[in-house]
Image (cartoon, rainbow, N blue to C red):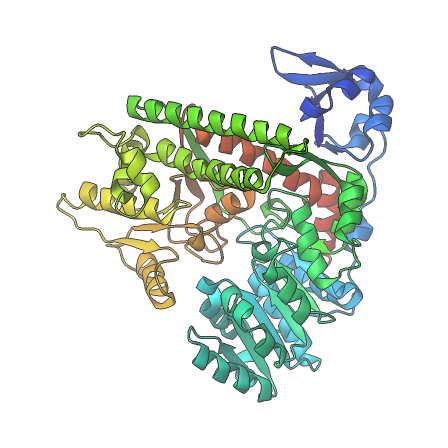
Length: 598
């Protein structure tokens, strides 16, 4: 997908993402600036450019601005019937939340489903509870809520806090043992008014039992978790919510690929986009490299945007009247140690050998001598290349993690043997320890994220050693998939309420649904794979309820490593998100006008 925006003097269009479009760009008069590494074209050529690339471009400067045309009228996008009134709740809604709930109700009534993609901290939960109260007042008796394991009980608590549903409805949460869950489903099925809350894992195991509950309205929280169109979870949810009005909640539904939103929408309405082949041919530009198909671009973008915006409501702090804390991002590149450089050189050499071998098999695949053994070898190479991704991240973070984990992993042991006997912690770890020192000295709290449980465990050990040799004693808490529900809930509560617990370490199990507004700082030990998860991480502390005017995000990037590659990828993901579901300035004005009119 190409991105286009005006330069400062307004005479040229600067074009991003043109690496696969070079020939076509030259055809319409574009040139490449080798100094600034960007394509550019004279503004007067916009009509020829638009004709050649229609539907493949995200205009960061709106097209009507480039063409000096009047601003479009977007008011129809946000029309909600005035007779939809939100019932009184125990805790009042902001105007934008009231509008969001009414928008959701309207789309549920007209389309059968809706996606609430409001930014983290804007209030998707309270809007959804308002929708549930509205539907309950009109006779809906069975509500099904599916979400992540970590926030089951938080949903029950929020429903009771915001609404009167808890007074007349049984609110049942599924437990961990099958025997107890069966009792919950039996009770839910014969209870006249019931809200059944389950997590994805239990839902997958108990789909047939949950069907007996016969939900009349469903909520799929953190819907991006089940975006994979061919996944069993996606398929099972589609079976249960077939013809059931549904609200999907997700901070960034498109994740890193536009086809992910197809996976979400097809669960509710398989006819909305048609089948996968139709969607792929109509909207996606695909490519193939090293055995992997990937999305290289988007076509008919304007049409795709319109179809998505018909059933999605998406606001950030720019479209709501409430004051969110500002975000200060400290992204610090830091040099590799000699040990890191030596190991990464070995890893890259191994990776190149895998690629060479894979290309040999690819060539052989076109001949008649390609065998089943060759196919198995190709698969082994693919898996080995995937395994190197985690190795490269560990090297970029701290090679001592290999030594920490060598008893549990053959791969870790292999790379631990490459470390000198007296290897020191990495420059990244050293800087993170210093940052945490400063945060605690200011009597503030911090959450630290890593994709990997082992990395969290390693940093807990390092932080314990670094901090608890001092006069004060601090408890360092964990929030990963290894802890059970009760331990995670206790750790979250202690972190929020106790001064001696200023540090919470977690994997991305901690990235969704939790309100950790007592913290001011987020440290990304390593970066997530998608911009959606990055936003979710920051969103744990950037809340309407925060007591801070600004929150601080620390990204420590090891130079010449996978960190820098992932950072660039996150920035690219952000642009794709903006192209598909975010709104431009004129749309923003129309939305804010609709919200203010109630």
